[in-house]
Length: 121
Ligand code: 5GP
Image 1 (cartoon, rainbow, N blue to C red):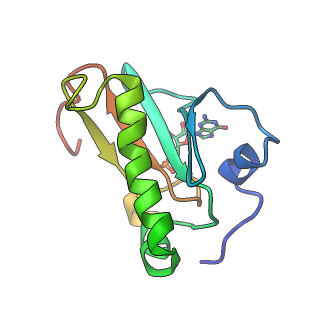
Image 2 (tube, rainbow, N blue to C red):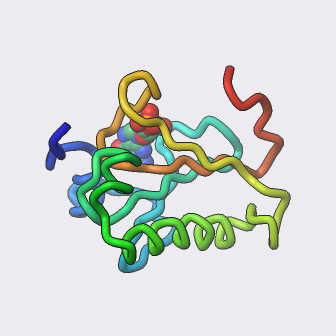
């Protein structure tokens, strides 16, 4: 699938749609999900144009991949849900149609602040 420059998260990255920002660096932007499913529900997206996790892992540079996954832990730490600061969290990526992905820009959901429950409903 080619990258759609008009997907919602591309617009968030360009500042065309507002977000409640949690963290930003060279590699990632993190913000709260507009429709939270748990007490804390954050999204972490890479700054590069990648549709999903497979696209990212196949095409991103090693620096981008390291920066993104380090960013996930930085966000968890900032939110106080990391192993170090809290009681842990769930990181989840939906990938493609069968995975239930709605926005075609790679994102990880971070759920925390309470027991997250069953892995798959
Ligand atoms: P997916 O189903 O693709 O894994 O998750 C997409 C997520 O993006 C959903 O949880 C949805 O609530 C969230 N979302 C959709 N549009 C917006 C938006 O404009 N702003 C924010 N912050 N989140 C959004």
